[in-house]
View 1 (cartoon, rainbow, N blue to C red):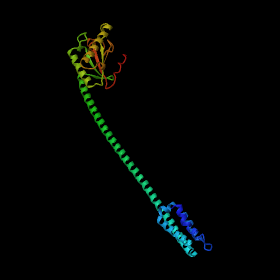
View 2 (view 1 turned 90 degrees about the horizontal axis):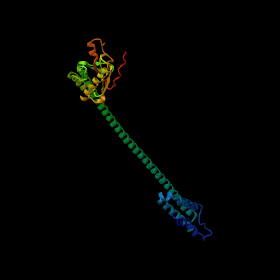
View 3 (view 1 turned 60 degrees about the vertical axis):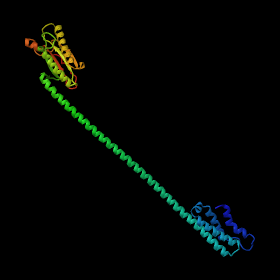
View 4 (view 1 turned 135 degrees about the horizontal axis):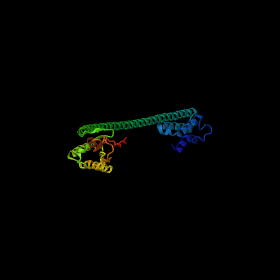
Length: 307
């Protein structure tokens, strides 16, 4: 309410009664009502929440001021001032009550907002947890599938290895191979070469074809071809003959499809005899080529030194 209007309500009676010296223009009750009115008007919540009640208080105070201006009795002025004071108090009380209700409603709204935010966060966390659980389940399924696939691959590899081992065992039996710490040793005796030559006989080539087949089925194995002679003849001749025979076997294996990097060769001449060189039969045993087939995935250790 504007200040000019307030002044007109509060002080109108005083202006109208200014000319009378015997009748007072106000009373303590009216002064108090006017002061209460000014205080109520300075409270924003009164105009906001109790406009009707404050209008009634304004009308009541105006009636008291008019009574004072008309020089009515003090009892009448005080009675009207009392009514104005009560209506001012009512307007203030209504304003306080409605303001409190508004505060409570606002607090309730804020609580609802907090609860809504909490529920929203909880729902988001639940969705995130569900998504994480789904991801974990998918990862677990993938791991299980990978493990199953790896197990199947390992089983297949084991089956193939067992099959190769069985096939190799059959071939090694046919080749009369001997199991040693260095690997399987296949001996190509003197009878599988032309006399004093490095040329393989058909029987010798048949043996090498079987060995090449074993090599093809076992790609993780290598061979070492070692040539030997008896003690007759010069050392140079024996060394040269053992080299030529070892080279002939290595070349034949390469021609049969064995990769050259899987073939090594050594020549020892008359060294490492398997029998005394005292008879023709024993000397024939010493004239040989030994083919060492490595153990699976392992290098071939060097030949032990002669005792």
